[in-house]
Image (tube, rainbow, N blue to C red; front, top):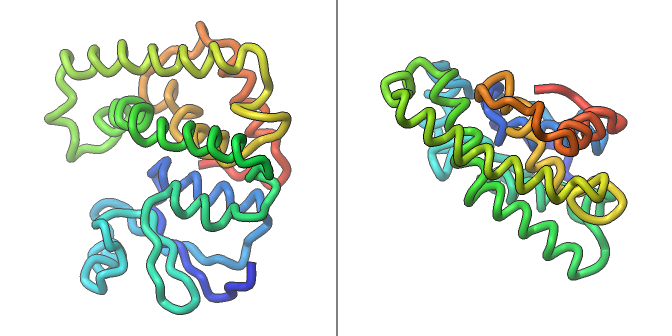
Length: 205
């Protein structure tokens, strides 16, 4: 990677931003500064005013030529290209992407949303008992899919961690502490969380 002046607009509390920070750390890319744009911060207002967030949210990777790349999984694909976190086989690459698409289409909209309702004051009004119960049931179903898959393997695909693991780790590893899920019934999933956390260069949320 030749870019020397990239910067990351990152929301510290967001799993979507965290997955990018995690990949950067695992790649040893300590040269990429992070600009924190947390909810309610002056830096977030400034980023909006300067139109640094094309889709209105973080994360956004600003390249050395000023190009703005939004969406966490697109940023993972850009940063991870030709790294050990992207398999060489075209089918394996497609399988990796399928997990990443599933994360945004299914997983994030339940696991992350329940955590957001319980974490962010401005979402409190939406955290009705009915909505939280609905998300709990749906979320347990999604976690079961991951647990079933991981019961016969260490990683989501192949013999090594890929972008799919980094992507899905972001919200899964805090599902219990922030989202109120009980991970006790998912031993394979808990083992996988431990393996991701043991990767060299790992940083926490």
